[in-house]
Length: 251
Image 1: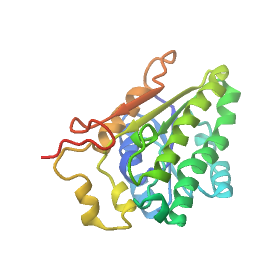
Image 2: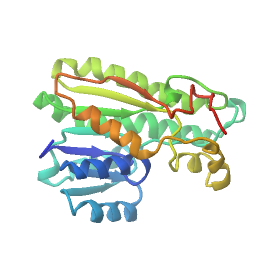
Image 3: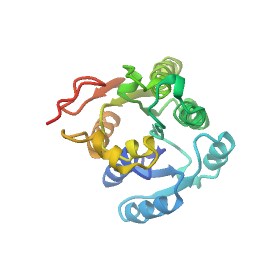
Image 4: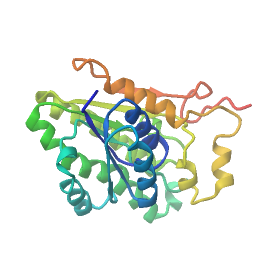
């Protein structure tokens, strides 16, 4: 994987950060993207010790910002070999009749349109080279709807569908496309969903050993380092305690 460049969205925390750290250890150049400039710079300082790193601060939901940021990349980072579409969010956990429409917009704008904008900005260069790998981070919510998950689940079902569509459209261009769908991963995800309520967020992971961001990073690295003729196209990952979106073996 020497001299490969990976572009990671949502790199400032959780799965994105853990993936960036693991890729850096394995000599993959990094384009780290996120909304929080201070965290991006901290991560850049940390990982620049072991690999080449540049950062881009933008909102994936802002089409113009996405294209401007990617166009501004220094020459040595312009050739993207691996795209990790990781940025995503969940807002609220309400029945559909009580849903906050601003939350709905945020989830659709980031989880669906954000993935599309970033992919649209990067895929043409992969097509031109007949080479590249896209990894879309989905969720068990994109495989199985659960109570009060409505719009979040819909957004992740869209990621699942787009992953399949990408693979079909890009097949003739020798580009690999893969999706990884985690179950319960202990990140800032629940804190965002519950609008900063740390106690409520903590209870989501109470009584069982949740997946850790590093677990998913390991899997992403495994997927992208298979021989080029191998494409692991769709992978669901649960913690041992989880049997479905709603069944958890808690102590």
